[in-house]
Length: 156
Image (cartoon, rainbow, N blue to C red):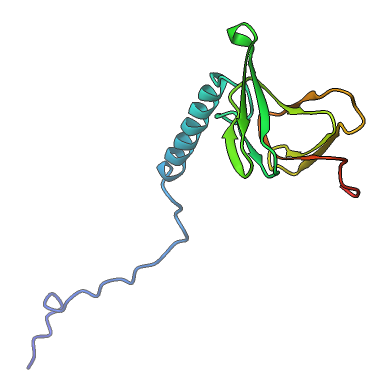
């Protein structure tokens, strides 16, 4: 006869019961939040020391899409209002180097400038009826400019 002693029979393992979702440990939320706050804090502090005082460190850039070179004047008030002028050749890009940046539009010329953060804010400067040229300011985001002789195109 087989052994019927109950102490010899294996005890059945009770089934594992899930009592709902326990959630993630707290550190899986807190550590990434601290990392994001640290990155934003460093970006904020480094943005305050930006030499241009603009919205984007690096002062933006200017893209010349026209046939004529564009003359840019970079003003730096911190250096006693010193101005530096340089030219951007056609189909070229250059960084804006000053706290205030301006583009020269000569008499008899038209400047089409797309500025703003996404270069989607159009500005038209028509100097065809004027006797002298003028400086046109460019914001710190930079711009895509097209300088040409003659009147500005209709419909723009």
